[in-house]
Image 1 (tube, rainbow, N blue to C red):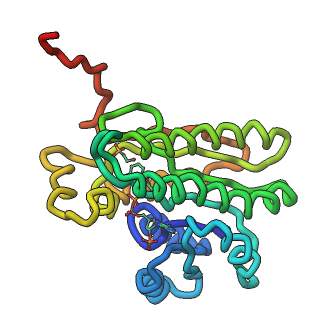
Image 2 (cartoon, rainbow, N blue to C red):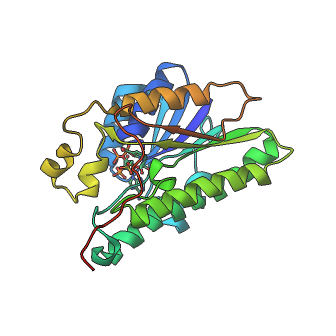
Image 3 (cartoon, rainbow, N blue to C red):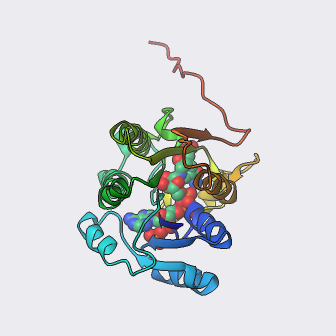
Length: 250
Ligand code: NDP
Ligand code: 8X3
């Protein structure tokens, strides 16, 4: 199969890329950092096609997809994984620029890739779109504001795609992970403050990008007549917050 993965240069996308190539699949690996993509190409060989792409530059995406070379230009699986959180504070202290960047990447980028790839899947009556949502799209938490809202969009868009794709063999899944260590997610969220990022994972056993890579591989290799609509996964140590009450004198 040919699998296009956005955000293949790090984290979940890289873990999945390595697994897929080891299983004999071809990967079109998209990201902004060309040196990371080239390092993967050196390690993985001809089954990996590095493609420099900024998903938030939505106008560029149709041409990038149209220019994919022979052997890679039929996309059997699209993994919309590129995404980011920026900031952990409350909405009234947040940066509007951070909010816009999250929306441009997590929402508009995912829409643009889907729009560019889906018609050919429907025409072939075969294909699979896996979107990377988050527990943050299901459960509100302090500081989750726009990040969680972008992932709620991803969830509902995924479900609405399923509705639109009635009668076709095209599958859609929204994978909704909880807290995962060992990727660049928190380094990005804390704007490069690596000490703060590392502290997020202190004192409990987290899941890792490898765990998510394994789950994604299982989804991709699941039978073509089975559709996992949504899959929420957390480390055992993580669970739901109770509703919060702020106690004060008046
Ligand atoms: P990482 O930060 O490790 O990886 C993010 C990837 O996305 C990188 O390859 C990065 O590549 C790419 N990327 C970011 N912005 C863009 C862009 N504008 N255009 C193209 N590529 C981009 O994060 P994770 O692997 O942890 O996260 C992957 C996805 O999973 C995200 O959507 C995230 O929201 C979601 N998620 C993460 C969780 C976690 O706890 N880690 C839990 C739940 C969901 P480059 O910088 O080279 O462009
Ligand atoms: C990332 C998981 O719990 O940090 O989407 O929001 S969490």
